Image 1 (cartoon, rainbow, N blue to C red):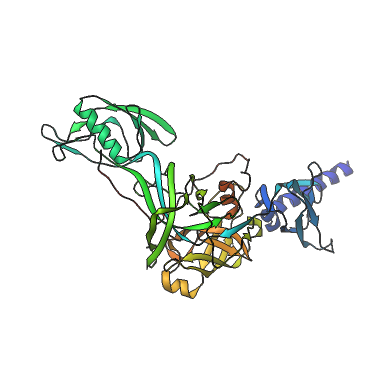
Image 2 (image 1 turned 90 degrees about the vertical axis):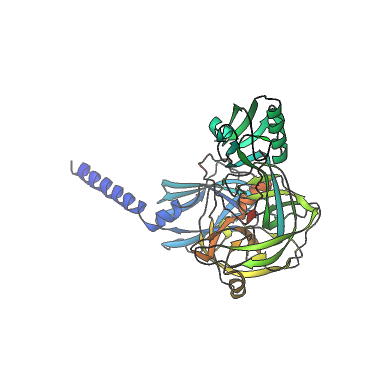
Length: 454
């Protein structure tokens, strides 16, 4: 009876210890690790393992990493290093007192990769799949006054018109011609449009506009966007590139552009509108030799644009390719960015990485950075629009790209990890874990033309 009582008390004490440990800083630090990590071959990743936690490698998988322990195994807090052995996958297990599983982390060792850093100012022209509805334009008619056939039929701003009467549309002028032609024939329009992920068909009749003497349906549409951004990296072997670090969205609707085709060209920075509190600054850029393409645009993703370069694009500051580093290698402290603030000259500027948000799945806002370089602060006031995509380099490795500026403090901003950009360019496999992913968009210094063609 006494033994049962002592066992009960002992069990409650152990349970209390475990519960208390779950609220301890060392538990929160380990549980804050993403369950899926990548380490580039040749790197080392370190953890601080505090008593009563232990770390081990699961024997159920082929060993691609090994654990390096400090000489003394009896300290309450000790650094533990994971060293890569070969490309592959391993499972790291954290246990309470070496018995109770607390956290499991899958570690993928991916091949090492070297890239030419960017920093180049590039002009971007992106054509959407179909045309984007960016506004409603009431039509003046003699009999009915102002009418809005498209609005009345249920077409919304942000919709993408894919085809009219079975004809795929690719430009605003083409849309205007098809509508006017159908109006003259007094025929109904069958419009196929995309709203989000849904496609639908809407039928309506165009009306004759008294002002233009053409048949219209009362919409503003746009078929392309253009602007200036920054190249992040270039692969000299595959000629693949990544730029911007964020998705391109339409400036009026804030909807992502579904890329049909696009191109990048050389650009020069002719001026800077300085950033200030509450008002982001901007690079004022000009395209150079727009007919001479640097490369194409194959994808417009949440982590930038990607495609192939037509020819090598050297960087005077880095004559040879340099390694990339996974997010596990990024450290709080000094780093640099490469960007253009005058003409086409790439310059390096000092920044400080102030916060690192380790992420399991592709997300923005992985890094919080602060501009510390006096010359950049004097020229731009900090991070400005058009600087998106500027590579972040730390310890001689590409670790990420600038993506966003803090509106309330232009000296600070966000950066994305290069890990996610390498996924988009196809250099490393995508994360297979099924998790909810939040779309992060950033409106950069893209300027767009508005057409009243419909």
